[in-house]
Image 1 (cartoon, rainbow, N blue to C red):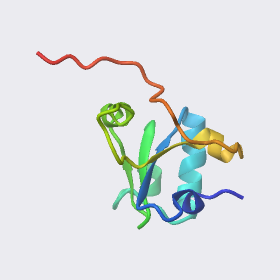
Image 2 (image 1 turned 135 degrees about the horizontal axis):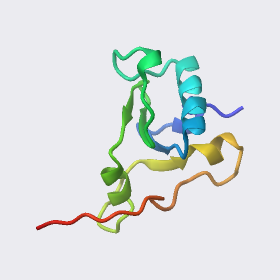
Image 3 (image 1 turned 120 degrees about the horizontal axis):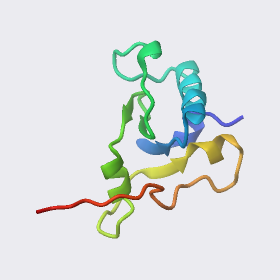
Image 4 (image 1 turned 90 degrees about the horizontal axis):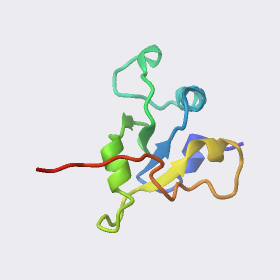
Length: 109
């Protein structure tokens, strides 16, 4: 059975994409069972987020979508591994996220 701990492996952290509320619930249940935590926030108060940073020490954190999308650019080197959690829990062989999956524009004036 695949677990979040196995997903991290020897990495310090990984970024996990969650495509829906249902996938979020699956992730939260696994995280709670495996002892992960959002700081001092009680399990019941965890809020949905599309991208979560999972750290080897058990910490979880919401990753801003801007950072997630930007990390796919050629300008960014050495970002954490990016995982599509739905593909991971569906036992697909390739569960890496190779594209941001969000469309947006950053306007700077």
